[in-house]
Amino acid sequence: MSEKFDYKAELKNIPHKPGVYQYWDSENELIYIGKAKDLRNRVGSYFNQDVHINAKTRVLVSKIRKITFTIVDTEVDAWLLENSMIKKHQPRYNVMLKDDKTYPWIIIKSENYPRIFWTRRIVKDGSKYLGPYASISMMHNILGLIKETYPLRTCNLALTRENIDKGKFKVCLEYQLGNCKGPCQNYQTEDDYDNSISEITDILNGKIGAILRRLKSEMDAAVADYNYELAHRLKRKFDLLENYQSKSTIVNSSITDVDVFNIASEEKIAFVNFLKVMNGTIIQTQTIELKKRLDESDEELLTLAIIEFRSRYNSTSKEVIVPFKIDLDDDTAGIKFTVPKLGEKKKLLDLSQKNVQFFKKEKIDQYEKLNPEIRTERLLTQMMKDLRMNQLPRHIECFDNSNFQGKYPVSAIVVFRDGKPFKKDYRHFHVKTVEGPNDFATMEEAVHRRYRRMLDEGTELPQLIIIDGGKGQLSSAMHSLKLLGIDKQVTVIGIAKRLEELYYPNDQYPMYLDKKSETLKVIQHLRDEAHRFGITFHRKIRDKGTLATELELIEGIGKTTAEKLLKYFKSVKKIREANEELLLEVVNLKQAKAIMAYFSKDVVQ
Image (cartoon, rainbow, N blue to C red; front, side):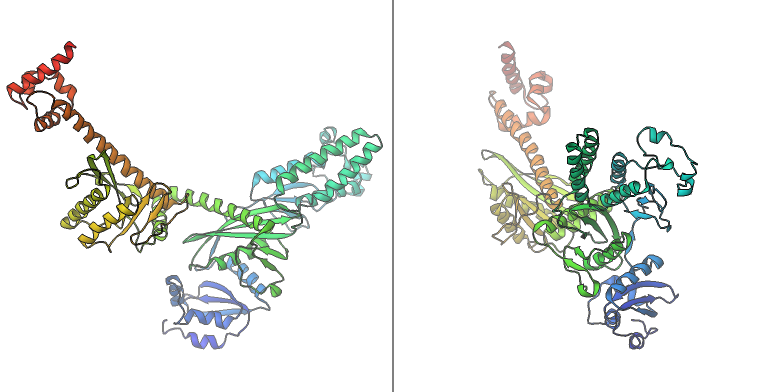
């Protein structure tokens, strides 16, 4: 800490009370805002040498030249004040709430015979705003349901009692079409209109059950009175609302007035999903992105998001469902935090998780398309964590063996750099020291030859070696690496095909990665690429061997000569078509005549 700032003197003036603290730099710029149950303890922790803090926080602390604070009554007040101050001042070291959209709201206009429409601008004129809606299509579906179910006015006439009684207005085409009941000419009473508005408000708040029960009762009464026309209208309204409810309800209707939150976090960003549940129906949902500044914990980020969402949606729910315990005094906050393990509330939490994970994947995919190097770093970092490595696997090599009934044994090695195939470094090996079908010995030879050469040439070793095979092949590879003295310098794993289990040296139990894991997909790609590359080379060698055997049937042609012919002419077809002059380029006159006689016999046949 710089000598220019005497933090100990500042701490003496800070009380042991809840509040919000502000850090200022040498330019008198506000650089960080935080909340605390105990201001002195929280501020002091930044300067405590015994407390581990990350590099970014150390940079922040080095810039502090002044500390100010605001005392509040409760920790919840500190939450709210911190949130509003961050939004107002946007200090450079605070989490940035990334929300560049102005979401739409459904407005119930404060006027006689209220109109209902959507808007992106909130005006404090006494109107009721419901939302915001993260999904434009969802909002339009709801407005479409309202329009189809409840005939309301859409005009902007001043429908005061005095103007209506004076007969200043006449019904328009909307009345003729049945979309409005004509309140402008007293064809609809204000009480009837207000009843419709009250029902619409209940629908928007998820309270559909009571409306359906009342409609059912009115339907039965209309049928009993033989008023089938009214019963039909009520039935159509009932069906529309019931269909809307069936699409919206996902949990038990006994769960009412609950906020649900879940978080998905990456190294530099996090995403938080919010679901508002009323009577078992989700009436609001949104996911936001938070940009980390000081490696904030998931708990800190989720706490910030809870305050932001509850403020944005004016939520007064007493129960909040979260994925882990929030460090806040429930009694003081007047909120009950629930971390469900089973049941309907757990289903809600899982649904929130699905939403936030989908949102995260979509955002990251978009970002990585524009910045492919970011995807590479994220992928390699994930592989390093999954495979328990201590360095990024920028250079990976994978070995595979091929043979045909013990004949023509070959090994292939493929190389990936930064998670992608690097084909110019692919290599084949003709097995030299192994006789018969011995896959373990073949692997041992290939690994030894590969890294013996790299050591001799001073080439940088890979960070990760993958052996296509189980414990036996892995042990053979490790034997070669130990002989070369590099077994501790690289991470080596074996992958068995049956269950895609991964084996580590000296570990009898395999490791299983999630089948959807990006790490496993890269390993599978390496294994499949090694198999493809190896089998292609093996077939080529095997075919040459088969053709060479056929040439050896010609009198005077031995194995060595047959291989020379194939090497020169590339195929048996070209040897068959060659004239004496061409054949003499490789063999003597007697052999040339024997070859021509052999293939001319085929022509005669």
